[in-house]
Length: 143
Image (cartoon, rainbow, N blue to C red; front, side):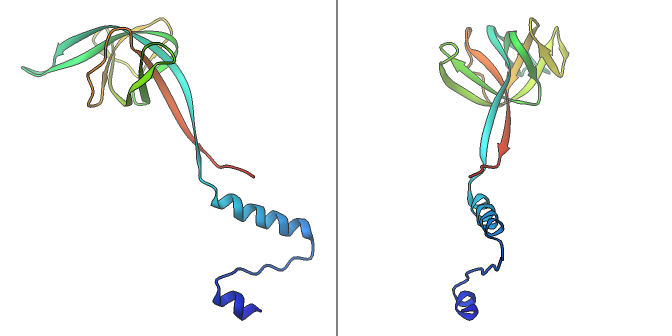
């Protein structure tokens, strides 16, 4: 029997208590389940104005002038931009490359603050778009 199991690549386990065996099988099955990604919204802002800013000579960058409605917007966190209100369609998902308040770089903007945001490789935002700052966490699934 052991040779047949080895030839067929089947793992044999001997236990004298049934619940230990069921725990082993359950653990092996859980290891096969895909990891689930949970998304938590840390903060929300609304784009009030889109404007162009000169950066070093002739280069221009589009900046979204925003007001943080709730929570916290962090500079190096993922963001998504929704068009058409809270339940609108996602028009961008990526990174912020710049977060400023009155021409000074800041790490985070809290509720009630006004700030300027630049997005990584995207400048198609419009007034009225909603920006959500996201935290993604991978969670193991259980049976």
